[in-house]
Image (tube, one colour):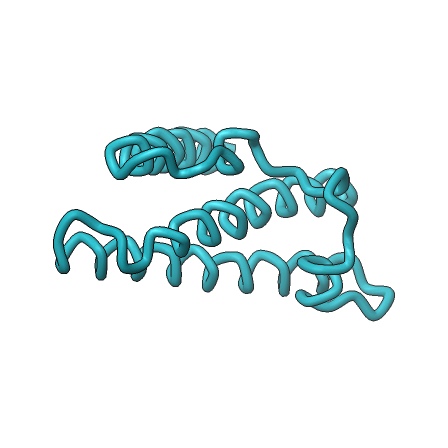
Length: 116
């Protein structure tokens, strides 16, 4: 059970990490200043969420694991993110649509978990 929880947290955290990095690529490339700043802030928020998830996973895992070892010392095949977050930013509309679908999926999953 504990290992399943850790793997689940990895999936959530890895999604936030990769998506945060992808949105960070848009910094300075938004259609206007307000949108550019908003997307950068969303990227920073996702990276903050990632830190919290990795800290929790490290606490559960033990064995001197830290958020940094979990985030950066795994091979690319050990990441549990969905492929949608890895897709390149083709244009601004695509990035917004991707963000919408990922937030919606996260919301639905969170509501289902809350029912347990």
